[in-house]
Length: 291
Image 1 (cartoon, helix red, strand yellow):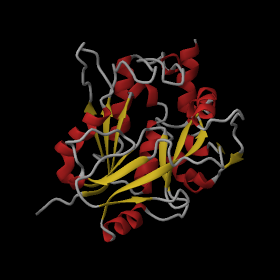
Image 2: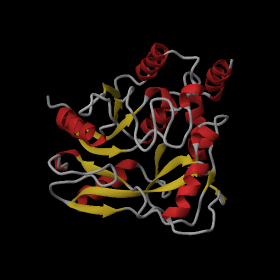
Image 3: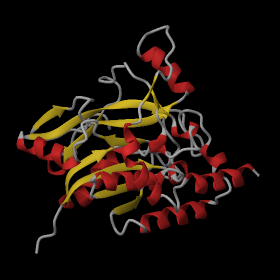
Image 4: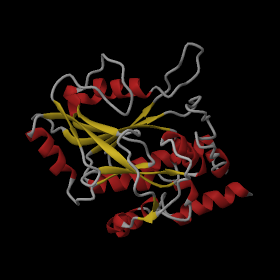
């Protein structure tokens, strides 16, 4: 019997310590949404990118200080216990590519090449997102609706846009899906869109970045943000300042709206996150790290 392919999958590169406080919620949410399998490229030891380090993210948030009560061995132990709860639906890859000086680097593009080369025969559609990003349909349609429509129309790639929400690290007293402060009225068409592609159409031979994954055949669909998007929980003081330069304005940006459209998932996500994912569990780590 020929094994059935995973129809919808996610590929991500991440640091276990930076994302441990949020990982189970992110995983459960996406499996509940309809994702079949998730490929987790664990990049601990990376020298970072965009001014980030092994302990501080690119926005200056010191995630090591927040979790210092956990040893590196503790972090990996919790990571593995979280993944065990998902019954084989996650594949964990230790991802430590090195530059010419021997430093561990992020290596996103090569990680996607590796993922499709190694697991592509098991994959139909692959989404590439980060763990502070949540796929979402404002039109309340299931993922399979979108992939079926794309296939029916000969598309091998689709581009989807982001909606900006308050940084998850600024809301540690909430589940991520409970964060409602957001920014409305900005155009994100030219700001870091993400891509979903058919695995058998992915083109590994050309240079690319995570915002436009290349394909060898088929056409590209651009989703209207009102139809399908990703919620990006990363807006903080540093990013608000960056936005003024990006949009070439002297007017400061701020959270100007609340969006509670994720509330439909709250009960099921909260129930699933009682272990390794609840606000109480997170708070116990934060309190221990403060001592």
